[in-house]
Length: 102
Length: 309
Picture 1: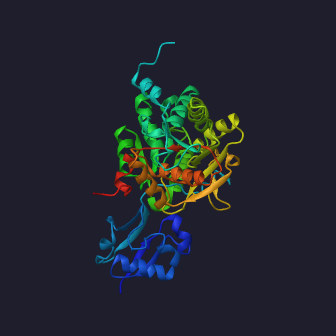
Picture 2 (picture 1 turned 45 degrees about the vertical axis):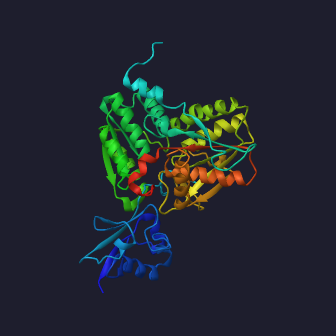
């Protein structure tokens, strides 16, 4: 089964061993994310809802194509696919080195 | 003094003096407990950010910060960027905004429409990366940019102290009320700091609750300050906060949809605040609760906030 690169956003990296990219196996995005969940169980719970669809404000992309629902996640991946998990909104993260500690 | 009849003057005059809407009955609460919210989507830039951006620009211009044709520079998750772009265009001042690439399409389109320069950063690197990019540009090109820095500019919280907070005091006084509880979140910290300072000075018993989103996927413009060691903006006076309450994106969205059914079309930070305010209301500890409806729901049509069909 093909190895697929999954790009991880900053807030989720603590749940992926601190990595910006990981590799996982699968013929569809759903399979890749399930495989990822076996290695990093806290990661997938933050990406998919209980029905296996992307959570609100979570976008899953294959290349530049957004997978909007569970059906899209189940579509076969092309060769050399790269999956990106991107928050749909630009919420604040908190590592501004010029600011002071809470 | 003659009134400023320019289109900038008209826009500036339209910033602030927003309605205080009562949500008590709509959310199933009953007097003597009362819940109010400032409806900030009626500002000309459709968000609360018009207030601090107007004040920061006016102070910067008065101080000569834009001398020599320097551009206004800041980072934004979108709403402040729109305010900078709109007011900058009206003033004839060039504006550059560093925005994460995952800011909603509606935001990016409006900033672009006003003629501001958009500098997009990698959405995977989060808002921090946009902020660091703005800092780096300001350091590298001091002759080109005036870095307004809404996270450290004291005019930000002062806009809310003199504006938003003072308005809340007056609007409640007209009802023979005063706030004993204020609920907000932390983006730059300007709203929470300015409003809470003003309300607590008037009534020292004020309790302040901060709505804190999960780090992922987050809530537009709000910082997840929940964990020890987290970093916060310079202008936030964290000593004002009595309690931090966690909020999920799902709860914020559910409240947005509930508010829409009441005729209030607002964005997810507003939903987060009202969800939190309702939880606080149900605790029975307070009588008059005030929160903020920060921006318009129109700005989230493309990000899945509203169900299709």
